[in-house]
Image (cartoon, rainbow over the protein chains, first blue to last red):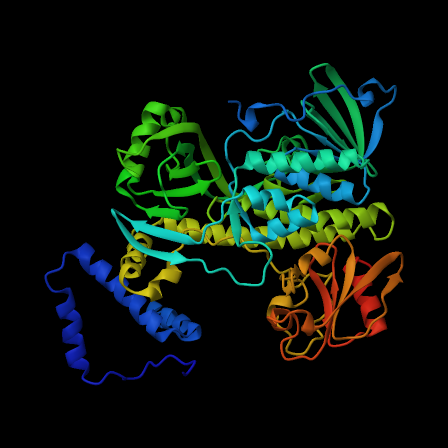
Length: 65
Length: 537
């Protein structure tokens, strides 16, 4: 696996994925949604596994310079 | 029946030092007859160093206190001649269960690595631990070793000088002055010695209180470690249940910082909590209750001239991971051989600065690990609680989340990477776990084991390599231990010490840490390595 975080379009059917993400949160209270997001982050992080990529992802998400 | 912790084990006796015209100067004085002070004293006495332990009490620890002893301290205790009774009496466990809210989320089996003489750890009340160490002191005394415990000898003042330390000691029969060439302060987290010398104790990263209770239960509770996050009987906090010998169970209930200690300790408040935890129908008897306060912090330096601090007196961590007594024994393991060489004039006094450096490295590692456990157990923000709960919820369903659950990372010895006593690793592609600075991992040798053959002095371990049987460099002797991969049919010796190499030569310190290694013996290189390991390079 590459040690480089992908930050270019990489999801087939981006609109479908986004709708699925919103649907997962539908009808949830704020605390339930927060919990779902937290679980999702952990599931995805484990799937990636690569520590260097995870560090880059944390940095990318922070939207700092 | 009297419990061992109710009987004076080293009752006050008048010492001739109290009647001396001028203060008597002893070689080494140790303050504190807890596990660390006793460990230091036994280590030094075994090497023939005169040592006097002063303790303001005359009994072993009251209540169970430190209960988990990891493999490395057990190996150190073997070297000190008192590991076996601890292992014989102690409780071994492999199964742990993790609870979140009102349910069990998963269980695990520790599956410790094979090929070690000692278990990953044992549970044992601190009073037994200290009793067995005191027994060892008595055994050494009977054999003529210069070791003495003075009960009810309370140090009231310490004066420091270039070449000695002066102690004002109070006893039931009045005060006397005692001098020491070297002083080791093992007087616990609230160290009066530290205070008397006006020394810092910085950190205080976390503060928390724990209600700790020993209960006697005849019930058929399994020998497992149970850990609760946010249980119904202790909302927003944690709880731990551990088995100890004699059907005594240890319960730790986290209480948070802002509490009324005296109120929490009262049996009428403790018992209902325990009933909620154990179930209404379980019969138990409360043996001991205490409130334990912890902070994470350490002294900036453990050595102050002729005064050396060890154990909780030098560093304090959270109880998660059993890093208190375990790391304290590694302090004295590191210190005593160095002190002996310095006292014998075979190493410069600056060798003792490596005690500071190496054990501060160890203390920082322990503080880091225990801080991370604390962050998981007691989330500090809304989001850290959300993430923590997410980990626990996921752990119930998926194994991937279980390594993220942190109820304490069990104490493992640290590798002194970057220590000035290490020589550069010269064993190409050698196993990382035995690189210079590492504590030697045990390995089976037929019916025997490797570690009992190491320690107390410098050893040249040769595995399928030639070398002289011994050599001496500037007063320090090295003795060869010649082994072959054939000595271990399980091939653990090869895996742990050779890797893909056909041979290896290790220089091993008296505390069983690796100082240098190469594929074959090179006299000049190993002489330099020995000089470096004794602070002369």
